[in-house]
Length: 113
Image 1 (cartoon, rainbow, N blue to C red):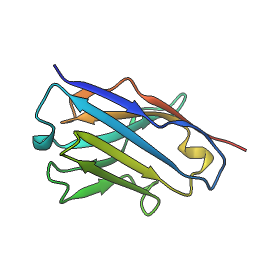
Image 2: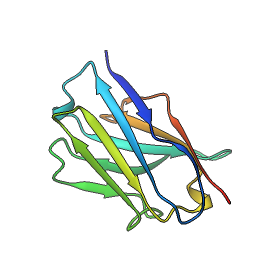
Image 3: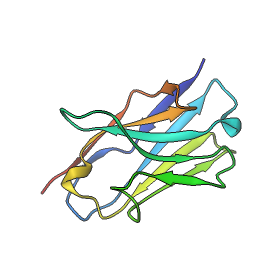
């Protein structure tokens, strides 16, 4: 069965950086489109970034373009999200998603001074 375990969240000041990781198991990681979503308190879950199976193409939500970078290491079955120039509006629970169908448990990111 698909298992996705996120890590790397925490508290960071505005303008800071974090790198999230998602360890995947139970499926052929290298064949799946992978993505990151986030959900802020009182808001709907939204797409942050997505990446094709080979990593050759990526897509970003408008609010994170130029600040976040999604990447993957198919040899390590791991998905990453590098987040730079963080803003308070980036606060939320970040979820790893496989094939827009299976979800991890989420990791909390809080951007606050």
